[in-house]
Image (cartoon, rainbow, N blue to C red; front, side, top):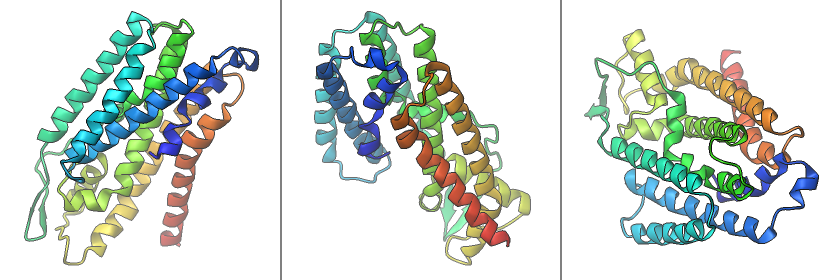
Length: 277
């Protein structure tokens, strides 16, 4: 997710309210929440790269600095106690996810040959993919809390569900884009698990160096369609949730969060049509 995208979450979320209510928002508050959202985004991205060993360990200091700036804004907003309690629960979920990620099983690769595990997790809790980034709902939820909405309010719950669907779709799309790198690094993601399951069904021997085109073909014919179908479902559900809390279509949320993923699904389907034709 790009900084341009996360930077539109708060101002975009403001559009779910009627226009006469939007004029009541304190511009200074919106600016603070938006800045905190971006600090949090920077911190989470660096932490994620550190867990995946994709950046220098010295960047931990930079990540901590961003997170400290976020926390300073977070607590100085003086929002409701139930908001702070709920957000602490989101942080707990993030810690549990990161703990699991550092200890999850890896794909065994020896001499470029992939050993397919005898048991693969087939039934996925797709919404669980959002756990690593659900704390990014901080900005919109802080905005709701500033207006007096509790975390148990139906509008808050629907808003959280909307962002959970979007973050799940984004993580699934990212995994689909990074599947080859993840496979080479031995990472078990939804995409690589589906690939290994299909290879197991077809009784294929996978070698990353010898005839890798067979792996790419397997991904294009079997895995990509399943991922696209799931993405379409998640995005359809996200639009439904958004319609429950907004009488008018929030242009920014749709432009920055939904439409890019819908376009990616469409391109994937067009590519598969070319392969089939």
